[in-house]
Picture 1 (tube, rainbow, N blue to C red):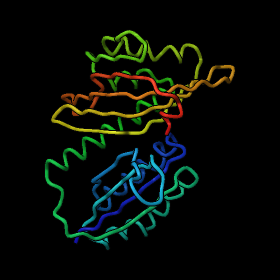
Picture 2 (tube, helix red, strand yellow):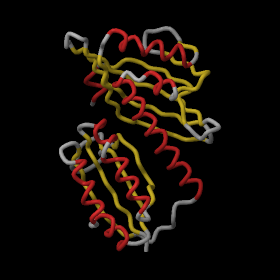
Picture 3 (cartoon, rainbow, N blue to C red):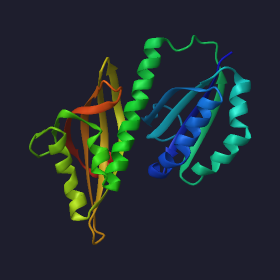
Picture 4 (cartoon, one colour):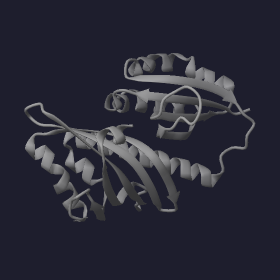
Length: 241
């Protein structure tokens, strides 16, 4: 009977988590026979104890024995310390005779995981001032409408807009919470809240927040990139909440 490992994680240092634990765990899951069904941030608590914003990861295993061989095994014991101090996790294991994920659902789940991962790469690239990595996350003919700013035509204009902070020596950290994601063929529609902290070279931080509607397009290489983006403003507290 299939078994499912369900993890709800509140990540305190997402960059460190994505550099260390996440790729190591993903490699091990695949090697030991697991398959990701859900990987998405921004969970909302509708009832019961807990807090919003957790990342939910569900992996499917052939049976409970295979799941426990992963969880209790020496390989996972070696990578578990990579998340200590940077993530609080609740972990559940359950067996279910439910029908396996159909092809359409599996493709949708994979697309959502890829889009969420693209968003995390965007935040990491912005924080690191890596404009080349950011540019690869936009379609060449994209349109981006920053809040209270002119419409930006094309990836070059978009990157020129974001590069102004790197040129000024500002450091930028972005927090985000996914509110909605829908995949329809080669298009995906994403709504999220974001809070941005911009710290000047003198160490003076400034916080801004907003909500953005993103349209992703899947390219011929299978990669998902931003095709349309429209922002509006929120207070930083609203955006972070």
